[in-house]
Length: 434
Image (cartoon, rainbow, N blue to C red; front, side, top):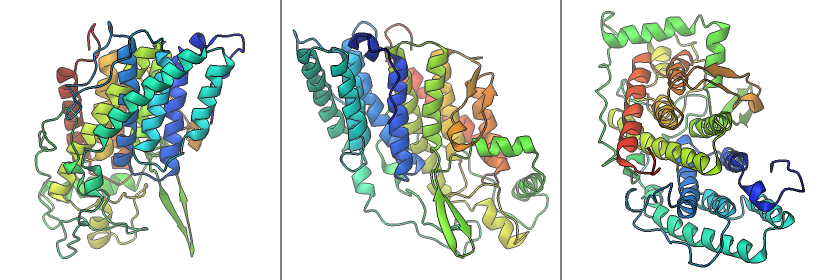
C-alpha cells in the first residue's frame, strides 16, 4: 500500500482532488492483479470495470463536462444519479467505486481492504465532514452495484466452464503447448465475452496469416521463419532492452534443473495503465481528465483483446518456437518465454496500438514521454516521441523476443488502432471534444 505523502495541513478537498492519488490507486490494483497471476485478457477486465465505475461517479459530479456511458456501452442501460441535496466528494467517491469493482470483478473479497481503509482514514484525518463522508460512500456503493450487475452479464462466468482447447498435434500448422510449462491455451472462448463498443468480436477481421509452408524456401511463411531465426540469433543490447521492456509476462516460469519458480511483472494492459499515469502527470491533467483517460484506455484495451482473441482462435497458428524446434533447430530458444495461446494475431501489439491511439486522442500526437513503468522490475526506462512510436516499437519487441513473426505484429498494430478509432467515433465522453 502506498499513498501520496501529503501535508497534514491540507484539507480533504485538496488531498482528494489530486490526480496522482487516482494513479496511485490504479497502481495498487495493478499490484493486486500481478499478485494473483491473472492473464492479460482477464486483467483487462479488472481495469475496465474499475475505471468505468470511477468514471460514472466523476461524470455525475461534473455533468457539464462529461457524459455518462449508460446507453453507450453494450448492456449498460442506466447509472444512478446523486440524490439531490446530498453533498458528495466525487473524487473520494470515485476512488471507493474503483476499489470496489477492482477487487470484486475477479478477486477474492478483501483483496484491497487495507488500501481502502487507508483512503478512508485519509478522508477522516483531513477533515471530511461525516455527512459528506457517508454521502460519498453511499453514492460509490450505488454506482458500484449497478456496474457490478452489468459486469456479471458479460459471459465471463459462462466461459469458465466451456470446453478446453482441442490440441491437434498431428497438424503441424496448428498451435500446441510450448515449454517450459506446456500450459493449456489461455481463454480460448474470450471471443464470447460481451464487447463494449464493437458490434461483435468478429467486426474487425484480420486477413489470414501466410499459409503454413516450411518446404518451399520462396514461400512467404518460410521467409518469415528465416527472418525471425536469423534476427534472434544476433540480438544487439538495444534490441534485448526493447524486448525485455515490453515483455510484460505476468508469470514467467523459471526452470533450473529440478527447481522451478515463478517471477511476475505487470501484464500488457497493466503496463499501459502505468503509461496513462505517466502521461497524465506530465500533462498536468486534472483529476477528472485523468479518470477519463484511464477509462477510455481501459475500454479500447478490453475490446481490442476481444478482437485479437477472436483471431487467435480462428486461425490457431503454431508458435515460432514449435516450428523452429521441429524443423530447423531443436536447440533454439526464444529470448522471451512463449505465452500459452496461438501466434496470429499478437495480443500485445494489438492492445498497444489501441492504447496508444486512445492516449493520442487525449494528449495529442508527438506527446514525448519517458516510460518508467519497468523500473520496479529492474529494467531501465525508455523514452518516446509519441504513443504511436511506443506501440510500433512493441511490434519489434515481440519479434525480437521470438514470440511472433513480424508481419503478425504489423497486422495486429493495424487492427488494434482500428478498434480504438471505432471507440473514439462512437463514444461520447467529454462534452467539449472527445
